[in-house]
Image (tube, rainbow, N blue to C red; front, side):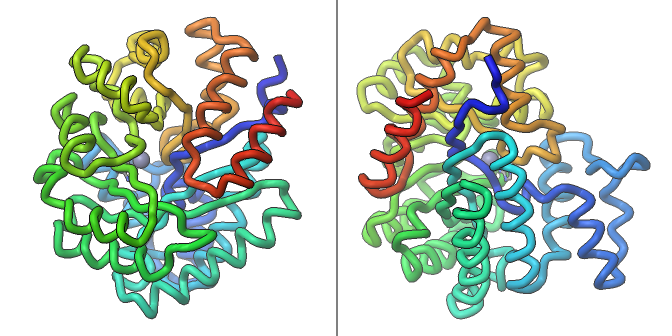
Length: 328
Ligand code: HPA
Ligand code: ZN
């Protein structure tokens, strides 16, 4: 199978986390900023564990200070995704990194991101939608501000609200106010859960935040009753195997539960999370899954159909994605 050419749908990609180090280095150089501390001698991002990763991520993001920086980043990221065969992507966008969760500033940054996405659609052949994301370790009050930004800009492009950041800080339910606000604005909901916080964090995401999808979710493998609950509720997991291995959630792909979760009937999709940080691409993820678990083109088409069904887009966009996948 030609994995590069296979049309792909990606549901879990952090915009800033998809910034290649050369891009961040270029922007920093233009602003005469020193970011040497976050880069290894070979130019890659340098971090030792998840908390350190979050710090390096925020340091890299701190060089992006204007709507134009985000315009350039969005073009770069969508061009790269399209080169991997991605035809539809949902990108996590953080108002915290775009003017500090101020609604007016957020609208300016978002206009630049949307313009880049609109230009990329015909040019690179990729449709992009945005999921506004709050950052868990910034706390519930800040998350509420991010939810307000989301609610104020909900529409054709901003289709969802979610939460990333340090899953070991607080409980999912501490953020219910922001998620309720987003739901009332007709936004779809997802949250990072069960990457670091165990199956209990997934349980809280389902029952306390009432999300439709879960970012990662892989640690649900330790709770068979909750697996049944996910299957019954048709909750979709945004699984990012390369991210989990790079950050040490699992030592190897062999030890990763993605194949068992699929076999248990959990709706499963595949994404890259923060690909340059984890030295991965979506094509590489597919190739490694094929090599490790024997997944074939039939499996990848099924995974992408699951992703199309779980996408936060309009019914028309979903239909056109499903038709495109039918043709492969
Ligand atoms: N986990 C949690 N939060 C994040 C991540 C991640 O992998 N990437 C960016 N924010
Ligand atoms: Zn993530």
